[in-house]
Image (cartoon, rainbow over all chains, first blue to last red; front, side, top):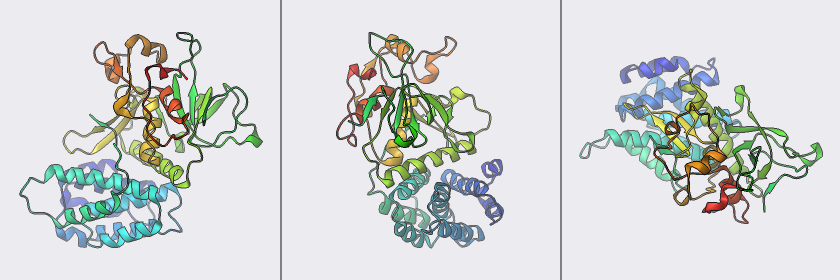
Length: 162
Length: 225
């Protein structure tokens, strides 16, 4: 699955919904969500229609479930929730604001920091690919709004780049 | 002063910084040669931690030992330091950071040499795919691993990375002896030095202050604790 995610073209990303079924292990789901983030971090903001795809709806659903305050207590669930939000952003989820509100209602600053780290990676990837003067894709605008809500958090150096 | 050399059994909480001393002194002082993060509580009722006792830690030995299915590492405890009364949010942040790192390791290439997890200078490195820019893996020194867990996980910057004192190659070899066959340049030690390197003892000095939540500027003599 990990290898598939590295080989998939953007137009085939919908196949990853097969690894986000309820029967799939948390580890498989995490790898699929990370794969979605990686694909779009490298490719740039998605086309609008992807936000209405079955994959995006499933990712949104997973994020909602993981961000339920009753289940988000375990670190594995929290990391999956953070990845699901990042994947929703990467897919251009039009209902991203609902997830942001849900995240905020969890009241868990550590989780917000984790989401901010993942979103910053996607944001930086998209920035690298958007040339100045390019039209502003809606998905990029939504990402900026969510990041602006999270980044009043102390901005941390995240390591030295090679 | 939440940093001490362990002389008698001492209670310690998870996420405390554990330091190991070398077998012999250098310039009459005991350097700290390795640090890790305590992986479980050692309450007073269970005897705490005695000097030289092996304890379970999260560490970059190398390799990275992050707990989870692979289990934690083990480190002989000679020094102990902690942030006075870490908040629930800080502890949770470190737990999440560690879980993120475990996930990153699972998704990175399977066949890795232990030394591929390691860097000395700088003390942490992010490696990206050259084409896509996607993060492939992270490398740390033992001190860099602990420092980043506190900084990125808990939001506590223990040390001012821009203000590290220089250390010579000779002094560094006393603290971190490496096998002859290892090329120091693989770990960032290019040229003859000196280099501004984050040392294990810097973290203990940082935590030894009343306000450990503000970044510490290590002094040249802080290679020992």
